[in-house]
Image (cartoon, rainbow, N blue to C red):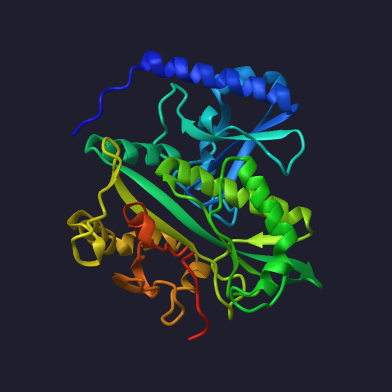
Length: 368
């Protein structure tokens, strides 16, 4: 099944209307600076900011960015003999549908950007453009992905040159909720103001560890939501004199932070979850089993990308509930792919496979 071609004229009209809306909202909210944000292949959220006086031109043309930024690693070091050097530029072209006023930074808004070549084409090294291409490939087969991410992060403060966790409360305890209540309430309010809606919240096992799962969305929106959540958690925590760390192992001998990714494959024409089959074993279809098999087959290559640091690999240990095994299973929190039990009232909507990349997984349950 193929999707009908997009009318470029209609698409341009929609974009023009969205750009005008952005300018109006900036005036209404008295925004001075608009951040043009992107997440590089190093996993670091970066960007530039444009003053609203000159925003109309930059909305169309984008902001200049040296190609060398894609030769930086997550430690902010320019990789020796990297693919991109001092010569060449791309443009950070904003997606106006991602516009939001930032509740934690006065007079500031943000948009998520695609990296475009100087002739206006998607740059091959742009992660967001790559995701768009994968979405188009799925759409050509009549599919769309929906994704949700369970975020874990650690709240800590710096004392005497060391990072000290906010608290050491028991897992899921109200003691931990109370300790983190001022900052977590503000984080959730700031996310909601930006159109990102956490479904649950709880204090996790690790010292100062919080978990904040976000409502599922189409995969591009889910990726943008992830950037919004990380930016918001860090910024709001900083206002409270705290650090919000998403590091896989902020404390070597304690539970690590996860980012469990929930996938489901849908037919948009019928609004049905292709993974769901109530008559089959475990309630999943043959398509879901093929998807799981594909992830497990390519797991070594995926881990090379998603466990990109020594700190990531510190988490991948048996008996830590952190997907150390190349396996799948129903409600198996040691497996690389976990099949969560669907909720009784929304079985089709909640059928999914959950893969924890080593940038983070569901949770570590203590030391081996």
